[in-house]
Length: 256
Length: 341
Image 1 (tube, each protein chain N blue to C red):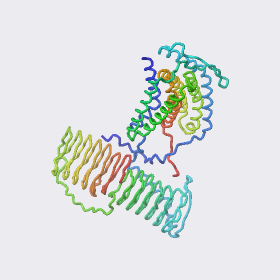
Image 2: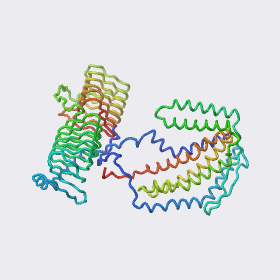
Image 3: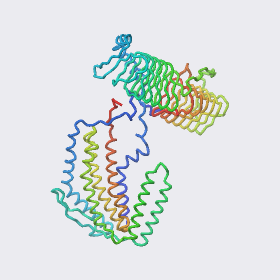
Image 4: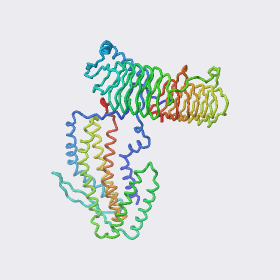
């Protein structure tokens, strides 16, 4: 009945009086980011090869044969062939343009009916509508001058993923390693984040490319802003949040 | 087409993975609650006694001597913690930057100060906007408005708390505690606890029934139930669903419910109330035994009385909301937070 009456021990103060514990030997942990970077660079040719193989196999299943191309890159001393998706994206037709116009109106109306506790969702939807409307405006007046296509989009997407994989250990170094969390947890969270970015990045690029192929270039701005870098950064923050909350590392503030 | 739908679905699910812990937290709000009070009054009692014994063992001779001289002495404990023994009478113009302040006369502390532990041999008045880790006064203790007590406040006699204080941890007084409005609290132990009206009449107008609990039978009720108003009921009750106790009811026996319990005006319950959910109590009701719930207790009405001077009791809930004046004899434990609005 009263199962959640806790077994009494000492009196703990309110959590607002807790301080995060800084690691005294923080400098020692800064060997992790360069090591993770080196590991990633060593695996990069294999990763890009796997990306290429995955794109080829999946696109063939979707009915697109020979739709993957490769472009050679050099990063520091690592040479690798970066795959890109060679699908054709059309300019929006009359039907697609008006469909998206109606869709933007519908989302705008829905955003007005979002209940107050979900206010962030309301702003997200309105930002999406704003972007979609600007895209509609652009393609109505200047559609022929749009510089992007699917090969460029997919290549840039994968380059973004590679950049994020190189930056993330350093971001964690300055914001996560400095606290006294378990060393193994730090390594695991960092590697999990990179693994997520490598797998998720490929899925994201492939999905976006297919959507652009189906719905024309009009969706490129939305894909780029909302389902590209932004969602990946959210994912990194989510992993970070998981890392810092998986174990409680704090002490009771001695001074107020 | 199947592969395309599969791709979108899989990508969506894969990108949902890192947000899953956040979503679970958003729904269950396990960390959004303040930390539950993890308190055993005996442990607190032990800590208080130890603190007092330590102070007296180490400083009694000094206190007497310094008190006679009316002067101030600074020193350090063996662990390096600084203390000051202050025997100036009246208002301290400025607090010293020590961690332990020992006062041997009636003192009013200045406003806007922060100090860890204060021990007062006499009465102690704190200033406004102060923060303390613990306060110990041998006689009366007055905590002024907008103060924050982080751990313990103890008074050997009367403890009065002004408005807008945040009282984390444990409050105890030897005689009585009086809380004014707009206070937040967690655990209070005192023979008498006044909420709001500190001059509430304690004259007992409650006539106790001459019935032994052993003679009262247990009744198990499966559906929602409303008692008959203006009547005396002599049973122990176990309710599986909601229960409403209307105005002017008198129940001699314990009540246990797996759902909400609503208690009307002028109800008298000579027994305990245990609920898995919320308990609402209205004007001028009296409950003799302990009130324990796994959720919230709302003392919505005026002049609610819980326990008596002869039979002190306890009120335990996750959240306790008190809207009007109430008197509780015994202890209150709000596992997460108690608010006297």
